[in-house]
Image (tube, rainbow, N blue to C red; front, side, top):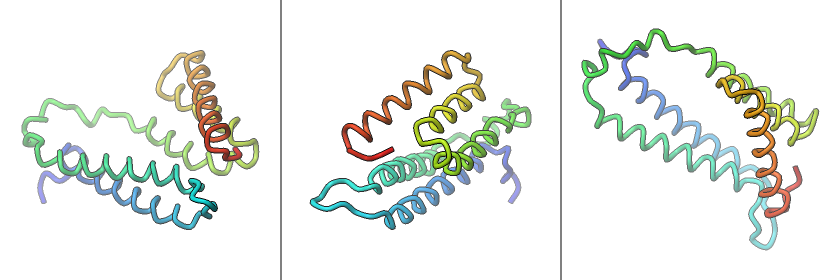
Length: 152
């Protein structure tokens, strides 16, 4: 089909929405194998399933909003060939490395490092990246360790 290239925003949004929906379904399915807790307490599958719901909703919104987008000619002034792919590639690599790094140095430290590196990749000043990482680790610690009683 002519016009169905990665540079066509409608096609890109369509592919992205399908990938998000598939990722959400896989995350939901995989988190079903996590153990459950007694007495109705939320188990370890709660957070991945919340993320799966969010990803699925975003994928569905993107899928249906794609039909309301203007035609390809309305995007002719975009210069998509100049878009740099190194940032998304680095973030995907970080996400791949994170589960292997976490057992080695601990979840809070690996989360701090990942958050700082992602902040630096997206050109935050170093102190803002460190502050963001510290706040993120603090919030995750409070929510999971203190409120939900999950060991990190």
